[in-house]
Image (cartoon, rainbow, N blue to C red; front, top):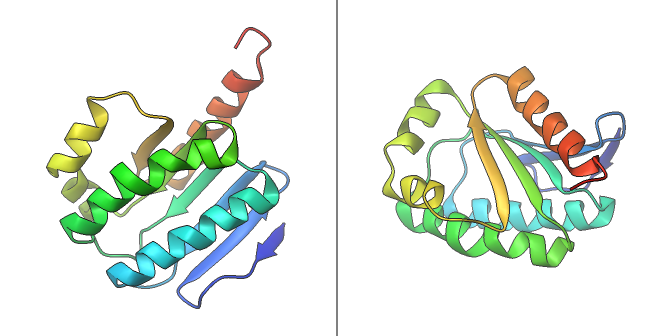
Length: 144
């Protein structure tokens, strides 16, 4: 495991054994911290050349619609071009946070249009990791 320097509300670790970046939000954060935090996560992804991200937001609260839209329609779409490959985002959320996202129009819009990244939301860490591992296997098959 390799740690990446991050603000006090975030930990970022590259797991060599899983070939994935594990980001954990440590407390509720402001919209400015969310934006800053995701920029740091991108820096870590570029540093480790890792397109598989586990984003643990269970300690975070849902953000306002402006920040949600920024993430879904501005920040996440520019990840793959910056990384030079498709980025896979496994969001680990509390059950109540996941329920909130399911009713948000931004997430419904995201799911109905093709994206340059793949994102799934989970409230079980083993399932979140398994999905990223499945993505790795799919990408590493010679026919893809």
